[in-house]
Image (cartoon, rainbow, N blue to C red; front, side, top):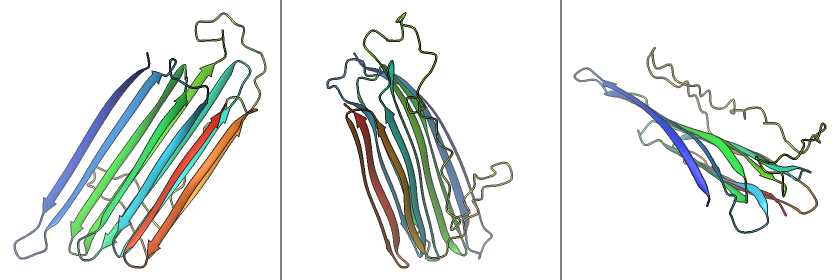
Length: 244
């Protein structure tokens, strides 16, 4: 039977103010972090891999939508391994107070993974003042999965080889970049909320790497980016890497 265990921590901070006769001011920040571990040892099918779906949408006069995905699966002598990471950001600014931004990401492990583990982190930030509204939404996540060869499970006494091919256990990539069009940093809660957001225009972009190493492989990437001046930026992607 497949099992999954998760643990989630959430935080939220909001402030508001304004003198009589002046424009009201408000900002809010919310964060959620989840870690998970599980197994799919009884899953049907012979394939093994990971899939990532990501989306960023921003509505406003100045908008940014950006995502980066890295995914790798390797067929090893003693253990098959898969890894995926994703970073998604959406940000919008609008003088009419109607800025909207949302970033989402979904990761899935395919096949009979003996163990998989990972984490996800999401943040949202919104501010409303005399200049209009600003909204930022960010999501990052990563997952690792291992599938041991027959007779080579976690409790097996099978010897581990002294040499492991470089492609068998891919290393985690460096954290994805954020475009210079958006100076988005983690807010300093103690010193008052405040992303340093300065977007000029409408921007949408994606950066995707997908690798599959083995005798029977699949690496599939689908991505779209779309902008309308002074209205919207949106980017979506679906990435699947698998081995037979």
